[in-house]
Image 1 (cartoon, one colour):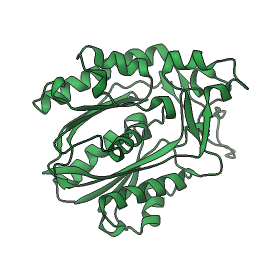
Image 2 (cartoon, one colour):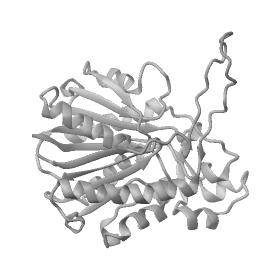
Image 3 (cartoon, rainbow, N blue to C red):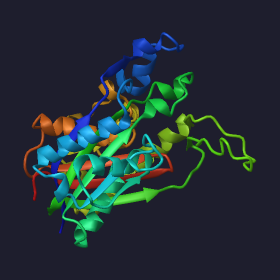
Length: 321
């Protein structure tokens, strides 16, 4: 016995930044960005905080599931950096929803939600929790060099959430890491006032080798799709809906091409939101769930890759409680 998805929610900043808006301070164009990434717009934090978005998406998911904060047995937050180092974002959410459940953050970059789903599976399978709240929240706009057009045009901010409850919806899951500390790297600010620190602080900004990321992403996503289908005793063609990490439309297309998956099965929203790191998959899920896209018994395959280098895939049967 594992879990089923009982509810979803999301919350996005009000500010929409278009590719044309970026031309005001970058040597770029809408055509240059869109043809290389599939992105037209992204959402960016202004007056909101990441805590605001995380709490709102959590409340929406709980409402969708018909669950109260007191019923939650575990809270997991997928994020690279919350508004505070401590308390964790998960503890901030717990306070807001009135929960005293164990709560902690998970940093697996863009694969964070899938890592959280597999952690939730372990807690539910061992009887440590019957209901798990997963929240993803990323403020990518605060982690970028806005003078670097190779990275800042790719990302957006947002939060998503899902409620998992004890049931038989999870069919299989696989997580993996190909350790690499250079291909995607974001240094931390350290020792700002320590008289003993001998290391000069590095600027807090993302550095990424785009060519290497592309090769890893296509190979890792393809490998994980094949493996998770094998574990679920399914063929890739048996999957009703693919929900891939929204990093780059070219990566999505290349990852699925060898499986001959029809584009009508592949859900995307990268055009409107860009890459929201761990949040991409949960916002994608909520958007299409609220449209009524999924019917009971549909098989959903989530697949993602991220810094670390992390990757993973999970198959869930929709509505199977």
